[in-house]
Image (cartoon, rainbow, N blue to C red; front, side):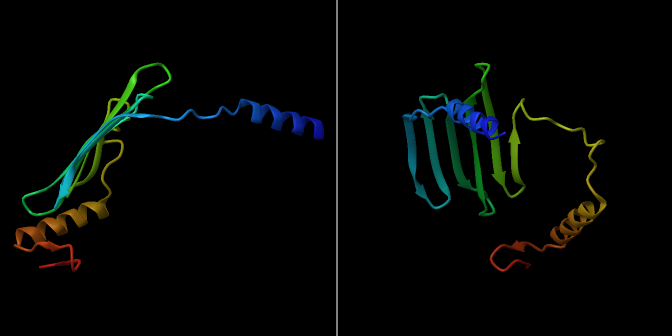
Length: 134
């Protein structure tokens, strides 16, 4: 039994491949000014990322970007994303999409959404600093 465990550990160690260093072949960015920024990079292993940030009309932060990396079959996986007052959303043909009928929004979540909509309709706005409706 000890021989089997030892042989397994040797095989596992032999299978581990040292990662090669990755070089950044392109990097660009703009200085941060308030909520505005831009940053992009590309590595020699095919990984790339870009993102930009700005302020929405209501002063909240809005960010968007994309990242890509090579898949084992040689194709490139790309994911585009947005983060704003509606949350974080990612789009890619590689992500599964379930029809809403299979995963309906729970009743308690719909109640919270209706409550927030009623607050906004009454002229109230959410204050991030205090965590209250004004």
